[in-house]
Amino acid sequence: MKTVRKSILTISTLFTFLILLTYCIVSCKKEITISGIELLAQEIPAGFPQPVYTFQDNPLSKEGFELGKKLFYDKKLSADNSISCGSCHEQKAGFGTFEHDLSHGINNSHTERNAPVLFNLAWSTSFHWDGEFTSFKEAAKQPILGHIEMGETFENINNKIKNDAEYKKLFKAVFNSEIMHPEYILKALAQFTGSLVSANSKYDKYKKGTVSFTTQEENGYQIFKAKCATCHPEPLFTDYSFRNIGLPVDHHLDDIGRMKVTGKTEDRLKFKVPTLRNTYISSNYMHDGRFGTLQQCINHYRTNVQASPSLDPLLTNGITLTNAQSDDLILFLRALTDSSFIQDPRFKTQ
Image 1 (cartoon, one colour):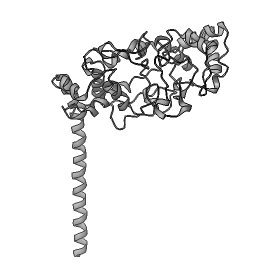
Image 2 (image 1 turned 90 degrees about the vertical axis):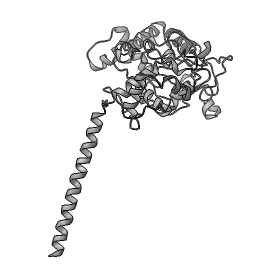
Image 3 (image 1 turned 120 degrees about the vertical axis):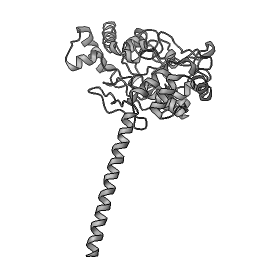
Image 4 (image 1 turned 180 degrees about the horizontal axis):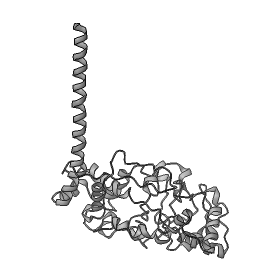
């Protein structure tokens, strides 16, 4: 009898504990709701593979996105308050450098490379032209601290923005802290740049069957698939590899590319294959911005590929194109322009 009572008491105690645990869980959920954070679903366009970066370590929210955007366009992140992330990554150029060869830095300096476009980054396996970084946070940290780019320290950034009421509100909402730790700054920037998704070009509408290509665009598409798709596969239009495409060496810059990261001679002059999405509006081109037009880029592949030990074997004989094929290819590349993305008010500076 005592054993039965003891069992009943144990079951009763366990039941009470479960009720209290449930109440605690519900209360915690209620606190999250009260905090005002509006969680966002990551955008994954139809036909795209699963992204590499899924914000698991950095829950995506409306407030985090807005904080990241404010930081992205804030010139106080640079030592002389003249350069923001958005200075070199302009929306009208697909968040690349607009009609400049080398990007600008503090004190009227120039960097050694052309700033790459910042969209569909969640699918990227590495960052920067030489793939030096494999995480969003490290990729954003380098230009902020870089002596040529923004040349600032996180301590100085904190001193410059710590009294900004909107910053304090957003940091408190997103990270439950008004202290602007470097980790929080980088995570917020990752929320903004990681949300820059471009997948609404004429090409995308063509693939969905809602528009048709012109004859020249269709011809250009077939040429693209035959001549370019190995390195620039659909739908992201890059394979994220590093290749030497036979560019004549600029001895003033003496940029050895991927070899700078790996130290391997076989990586000399290899650079990351860029996406061709929005390429029509993202000049200048190549890692050093040497070409101002797509025609110049195509002419390089047709007639000016330079042989070297690390040259990509696919380009040993260049790419053979007639003038008409070259024209049609450019019209297809123009169809990769996502006008809604480069005009999207969500991404604009205030």
